Image (cartoon, rainbow, N blue to C red; front, side, top):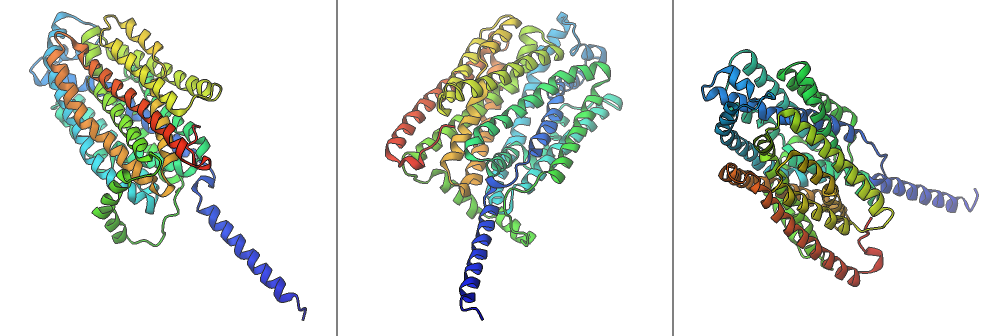
Length: 494
């Protein structure tokens, strides 16, 4: 027997152990897994279906409210036509506050419960994977879109109904997690599957996907409505939601090495345990070295206030445009489409030129975006002609850059095992900000729409001022951090 055989065998065994360790290490690195972009495809389909009916839904509610106020069908149908006679304007002034209140209650319904659920689902996804959350939220959206189509069919072909019924359609979306959980799972999935240096770009892509879905929905809504009817638009929307759900279930892979043998009871115990909520809150607010806690909380606040302003504007925006400029659904969709195209162009320009060529940092881009948002809302408050809106949007094209840049910085600061917790509590805070925005903006609009209908834009401008201050504070804290920390652990402005 070869005396060196034991040595050789030991070396071979050690080599095999090293190889096994390497395999385990590779499998434990989510960022090294094969990148799949099926998630982005499913998101495009879902957001297209969801936004195809967004403004049409308000039109349907206005019509049903008009009928509930005992006006005849021809008069109520005329509210959504190109005609803008004095009778229609008077009726709309009567029903708009009623619809604004419904929108406010609807925002509260599909904000509070999803925000609470997101607090539980984020830590759950760190252990048991992102796929269960993605599957659940997509199913909720699909069921809500199907419910909208059913209600529209009933109101159009059987008998008119109360516009409050549309608010009940949000129940499936609400109970299955809603927007906060969908955003949390999406952000965690992107962080899991994307290298740190490429993360800002992919987060920007996710942001642009939302706008592309809105753009396609706005462009095709009026076309489909003119060629068919309202029910067909809702039916197409429901179909998109259904296929997006099928897509996410069967084509999107898990990004976390979740335990395969976990029982349902174990998962439910983990999901509903308050211990994980307490741990998540501690993770968000715990002391961190080198000013990292101050930086993290500032970035979370910027994101929360940005969603607050966006939600408030969305609640009132279409009603303002109808009242101020006598815009129809088609007019609104044309402007929204132009606004989105400009926003996408500004995002590509900002990321491709300002960041890649001029090497501006993430926080510098955030400041530029927030200043653009300030100019946008401040000028729109005093706009008197429709072309003013088009011009203002053209001049403030960098508005959405702040969100992906802030999320990228957050993902670079926190450890990998805390991503689900931090993004979960961030999206919950964002959702809860909608709870305050909807009633506040509704109250201001109902109080001022006859004298100064653009007053709610001044609230948005004030929020932007606060965010700009927070952004400069974050830059100062970040510079202090970089003077204290070792070079190899610095936050990279990618």
